[in-house]
Image (cartoon, rainbow over the protein chains, first blue to last red):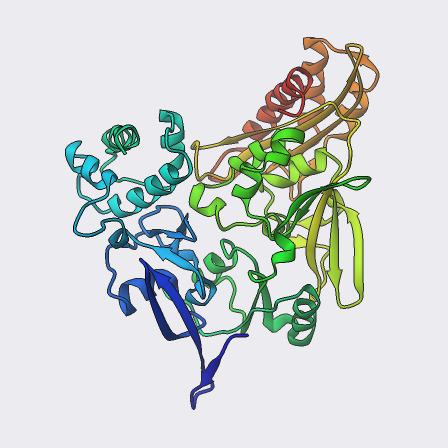
Length: 165
Length: 289
């Protein structure tokens, strides 16, 4: 059962606990709080980007219980009790994830705005399928639009990361 | 983009969900994956005072085979669970493949079977293949359950027979006489595009002849429609390329497409002709793959 307080204007704020990048956060949020705004505004995790805000571009992709989703389409309250990984959660102990290493090596990012989203889609793919084909890589990042249109090096970098993880 | 204020309920049971929907009436909106409701709220096409989320009802998230009944898919099952379901790979790969064509990976991890049906978008990818396989849906409301053929659920764009307090709880694909099925979609891009045309076909092949066929056309009428004249035409005929081509011509006369940004009515009609032929051929040659 969700706990909430009601302010003098009758607006409810609900108590939610989210595990983000391994840390637990307990916060009061309004029902209309979107996960992408919560991550960026409340937790200062601005690596997750906003662009189309209608589930087309994938800039806001995060992992929710390990699955890539558009955080612009999710109510924070809906993520209560669940695990979220953002791009900030990829590196550990000061060491970049193999995907990040390979993105740099292949000069995959151009302007870089879509990069966090592509990293999260790629991470979810490799977690599920450690040796994807090129087709599977392309399908996995098909929900991430790169307006520099630099998909080729992203695909190469992800395949390279899969081989060397 | 921000959402207006609303109140949120997260019932743990189907009964409680129906009660809440009944209690709040038109003020309330049911939400499953949110990929339709949230976008409509952002675009100010919907402004519910209350959202009732079925996210926490685990009972709705199962895919299982029930002997004597068929494959039962809970309405809360997300598209990617259809894509990766071993049960479906074994029995109806055609359903997995149809689910795979919906939107993109991120949306497939949110959007549910019940939502794809309940939002009644004419170009939805799941209804054609499910109808071709003779699927029924279980609808639950405060008065209890009712079961009906999926093809009778749709009334028009965005409209279904569901009353305010009712939710779709499961989709059942009965054991088949059909030996093959398939869904072919044409979108303007490979990913993230709505269907311009989607055609599903299921066939019962016996001794190189078609015993029975079902053809369902998506995105070319206000609701998914069966091409019943083409189905009738195919019955008890020997399979040949000419036969399938003729069925395509008949099917293209059975839809009422509109012209919009994605394609003209004439183009859609002609694509129905081609896709019907191809979907039939694939269902004949490759079974439910």
